[in-house]
Image 1 (spheres, rainbow, N blue to C red):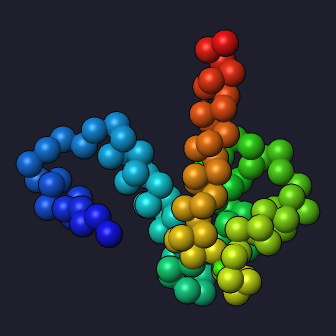
Image 2 (image 1 turned 90 degrees about the vertical axis):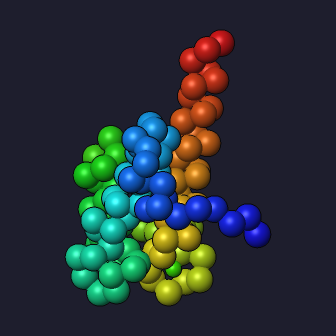
Length: 107
Ligand SMILES: [Ca+2]
């Protein structure tokens, strides 16, 4: 396993780069919603729905059934909660989609 320095030890000496800001946003956005009800370290269906609706443009267009389907596909251990690892798979999927749009755009 690769051992990385803690971002908090680096923070004092350096300005955050855009990529580091993006990482911070990905982490803090999770915790902004995960702390609302139940376990503070996981997203319930309601918390996931809020996050998608408020933080992603596509969320406004998503139907309840689509959110249910998304929840089911992300909830790998079927505990009805989205933990950080499951959330990071969701972000990776979004990231890949953004990359596809980016590549499509450059054609
Ligand atoms: Ca889960």
